[in-house]
Length: 157
Image (cartoon, rainbow, N blue to C red; front, side, top):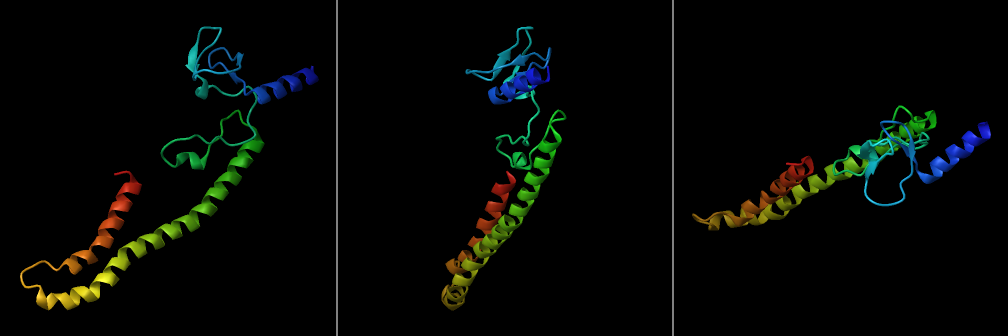
């Protein structure tokens, strides 16, 4: 009996079988869309069905926001999957620190370079501009404007 259970679990893991959310019957997907109809008549999405055998790895879904990078486990997953999730999250945090530092540094460069490049020409042009707008002074504001646009874009606004 134990050998049969191990063989069933091995086949389920290898085949990616999942369970019907209604009757818990094992289901194998061999093509087609994500919409499933179980023999009990229950209709569900393949992605919402739990695996027959608990996973050994954290779940990482593909979505537009960054939340899948954090990962998740389900209550049915093994202790090894939960430990894997902790290791994954430690890696995400470890990678986020240098990425954040590079992003802040890049924003600092975007803000300061136009100001540094345009400051001297703006000062030289100022006595000669008369009633016209000093284009170099306007250029000095381009960096903060671009950096602000990048921050708003990254925040989803």
